Image (cartoon, rainbow, N blue to C red):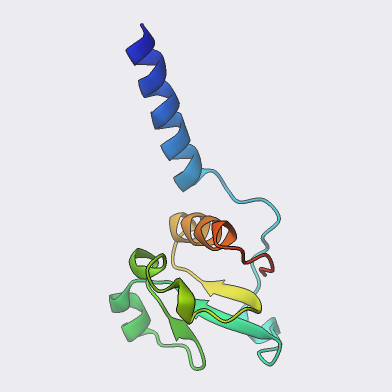
Length: 103
């Protein structure tokens, strides 16, 4: 019985961390941003960011985000993502490391 409860809690935590939407983060198009004040981080996969490059972004795929966190400047950030999963995981990883401002 205890094993079942622990397993259920672990599965619920993993599902929450990946799929539950991060609150307070709005979807804004790149055209509406002032790129002098906000740094744009592209966390899409290499294949996607190579096919559709965005000028002036820092390309760090979501799989490499934790190990390359030092490359991200201390500024308000705008994340370029290809899915809700990337958005949720990217924002939660950055918040854990101390970045607060997001668009």
